[in-house]
Image 1 (spheres, rainbow, N blue to C red):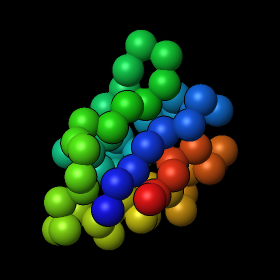
Image 2: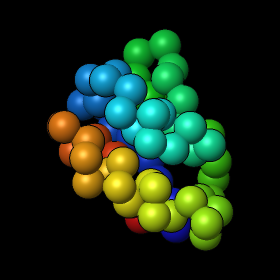
Image 3: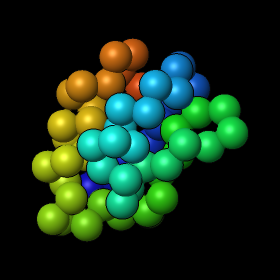
Image 4: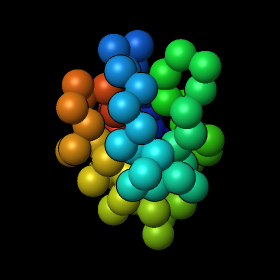
Length: 60
C-alpha cells in the first residue's frame, strides 16, 4: 500500500495522532514518512484516511 497527502490538507494533525509511524507534520501540511506502508500499519492508515476531515489522504 502507498499513501500520499494532497495539498488540501488543513494540518489538523489527526493522521499523525492515529499513525505517527507513517505521518508527520511538515512545514505546511502533513507528510508521509514511508514509501510503502508496512502491512501491520495499513489498518491505521485506512482509519486516518477515513477520518481525515478534508479527505486529503489518498491510498494507492
